Every structure is written in C-alpha cells, then in structure tokens.
Image (cartoon, rainbow, N blue to C red; front, side, top):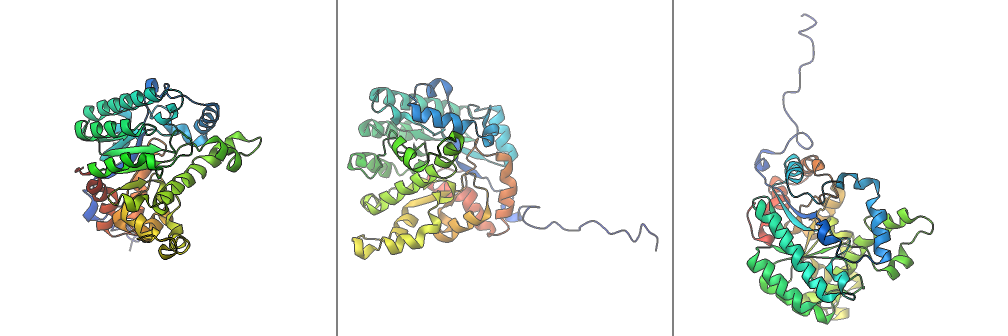
Length: 366
C-alpha cells in the first residue's frame, strides 16, 4: 500500500447542528418579530428630558452598538442584504424603542398623537416598498387612550399592520397598562385580534437613581439600567402586573408578546404559582396559566440555547417566536444559532419557533 493510499479520507457525511439544517426545515422561512427602524426626522420630535438623553447617549456609545451604525435608518439595500445573509424571510418592523411618542404626554400631548401617526405612515412607506419582506407594528400615543384606539384601527384596518408595540411605561411616568384608563386600548386590541408587543425602554429617573445608578460610572449605569438588566426587569414587572391585577382575566382575548427570551420570567414560573396562589388571592386562574395562555415569548437576539430551552420548557413550544432584534444584534449570527437550536429540538418545533407560530398570531404567510 502506497503512502497516498493510506492517507485518511475526508468525512463522508455531514453532521447535524452547526453543520446543516435537517432536511425537513430547509425550506423554512424565518420571521423576525422584533426588528427595529428609526426615522431621524421624526425621532428628533420626541423630547429627550435630561435623564433620557444622558442614558441614551451612553447606551449608543457601547461597544456592542458598532453594528447599528448605518443600519437603524436603512430600509433598503443594507437591511435586505443582512436579512438574506441571516436567512430571514420577513421582518416585523417597529420603531426603535428607547423612547416613544408618549414622552410628549406632558409637554405636547396632541403633538404625540400626530407624531405617532407620522411614524406609522413612515413605517407603511417602508412596507409598501417591499411588502414581501416587511410587515409592521403600530406606534400608539398611549397617553391618549381614545387617540390610540383610533390610530390602532387605522393601522390595522387601513394600513394592514399586524399589531402594536409599546416601549417602556407610559411616557416614562411609571404608568402600566393595568391602570383602568387604558382599558379601551386593550379592548380594541382584543377586538382587532392582534398582539401587543411590550418592549423595554429607559426606566423612569426615580427608579433609575435608586436601582441602577453607579456613581462615577455613567457607562456602567447605562448598561445596568438598560440592556444589561434594568429594562428587561421592567417589562417583566409590566406583564406580572397585568396578570395579578386581573387585567388579563378581564381581557381574556388579549395577546401579549415579550422579547428577550421572556424577559427573565421563564425561570420564575414555579415561584409565580406558589407566591401568587390563585386561591389565596382569588384569581380565576394561576399566574402561570394566565401567562402561558396570553403571552408569547420572542428570542430577540439572545442567541443562547439554555434560555431558549427554558422558554420552551416553561411556556411551551407553541408560544415561542423568533426575533433577531435587528439592528442591535448581528443578523449574520442567526444561521449558526438556528442550526444549533435545530440540534436540540425536533424539526417541526424549529419550524414553529421560526415561522408558523408567528404566522398564526400575526395572520400572514411568509
């Protein structure tokens, strides 16, 4: 036998996981349900009180924000190129949400209503330019419930939007949607049978100062109070308040989506059911049942298997959605993550997470 004949041969087959998608999902069309865009000429109309302006500046200076440059405002060539490289069939677009139109609640409430309408018109122009690749969530002036209902109906019935998004609390005031004045908005969302996405934003200053301020280190404070911990915690508080206040029981057809692998809630499900015992507090359902019935979880760029597996194990695979959190996370990381996820869930479940769960709740085909 010659030396060349004794040379080890190449691998004869490809393994699963990071090497390839299983055959059953090679035609999968992933839908990203939390993908952001901003419109500078409109964004500048949102007042930035000093606390928000300072935190926002430090957030945008974070090293992980380098990818965002040139992408957050792009709705054309670069975004589509990134989507293609990441294997994303459709993005559900929403206003990039550290602040929102409710920040005009005190200084210019009517201006907030007008700005929400202008943002939604801008979103619609993006969708209309490429309707096979984009859908949209409406921006609502939540500080004005009647105007929000009117704008929601316009966006869903006339513009074809697939839901709405609220970033943070109402006007960064600390108000949550369990307050009675917001019942008309929740009823309208039920009536239209579209989801409401609860997205993080910069917490109110009094909360920030007590919980997240790291004296002498504003960069660290910004990371701690926003994407490092704080604003995820605020979304979880919002959802739990909707459950234990009776709001979810009052609005049984309300559908909520939260991002970032459930905003830390999956690991707490057992504690919710024991500490908020339905018999002790007079609930019709356990908190766990309320959440699993009415809340969906999006991955939102947390491309790590353990939290994904926790979300699936606690919420059920039918309630987990894919999202890349573009442009704040690199879309180019998506294929590797999905291949790895496909190695620990069945092909049918991977398709649910990436495509068909979103198609069902958002009522369109990718």
